[in-house]
Image (cartoon, rainbow, N blue to C red; front, top):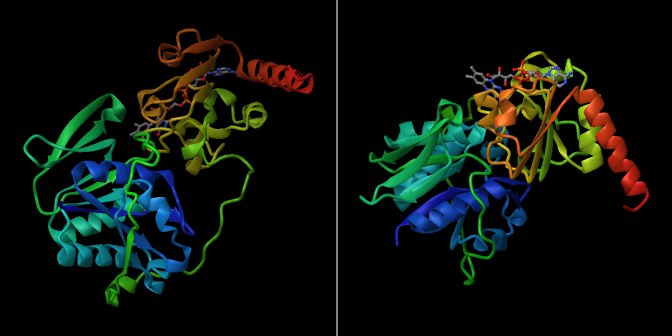
Length: 325
Ligand SMILES: Cc1cc2nc3c(=O)[nH]c(=O)nc-3n(C[C@H](O)[C@H](O)[C@H](O)COP(=O)(O)OP(=O)(O)OC[C@H]3O[C@@H](n4cnc5c(N)ncnc54)[C@H](O)[C@@H]3O)c2cc1C
């Protein structure tokens, strides 16, 4: 069966859900092999085998940690040239998309970024679902040139648990002589994002977002989120106004979320915002305008001032918790 390379998205060896999604797609195309950039002692192969990886290539070199994306693109081009995989699947992170673009140039191959699904088409080509126009349409795009390269948006599918191989996973260390040119841009400092004690937005099961309707005051949004153990998101209008960091923007040019519950407060429901949260299980909207487009998508809507509504909801939830109700 043809080999499919999957670039592992991990933090210090802890594999993120995106990798499980990519491995699930890879199994539809052939035999998944994981590509792990990092020290082998941090790798837990079982995390990859559980979702179908039969092999893992470990690439451990200071260049992958200390430089920007070029060394990873070079290493992947080496794997494409020597292993001749049938496709390369990469997470749609900012880094992943730049690595993919460089790999596409190096291998003269077709690339689709921000796909929401990957399958084998009837003609045998790698076929992707690619949302366009802010998610209003989904196009079907086949890659017919070179080694197909696809980046998959996080939270595109629910990977089945324990669907993978039960045989031991093969681990192979790969040494690539990274060129000096690829090491030209070096990372000189890293700063961790402040830990706000809230769940990661992309993976949270409850998200409470605020928009321009907050007027820049996110206190009620944050208090409501904290009483639910939720992540906080923001619309682009709130981010552009400097009220909230871009890393927490939900939408077409921000994070895609698929929580069980999404609460949109003071958000009108522009198509570019909906593109990042339309797959939420239940949507609650709080807006003072009864004609706001967000109510067209919401399962439950409250017409009113968001501060008043969220503060009342927070107080009620807190008091029920306190009384054990
Ligand atoms: C290429 C492109 C990409 C984009 N990407 C994104 C993206 O990733 N994410 C994104 O969000 N947007 C994105 N946008 C912007 C998008 O088009 C909208 O402009 C933006 O989503 C509007 O944000 P908003 O809903 O907070 O503001 P508005 O549209 O101004 O809506 C504010 C809402 O708050 C309500 N409101 C006001 N006061 C209160 C109150 N006190 N209580 C309750 N409700 C109140 C109003 O009735 C209104 O419905 C993009 C646009 C473009 C062109």
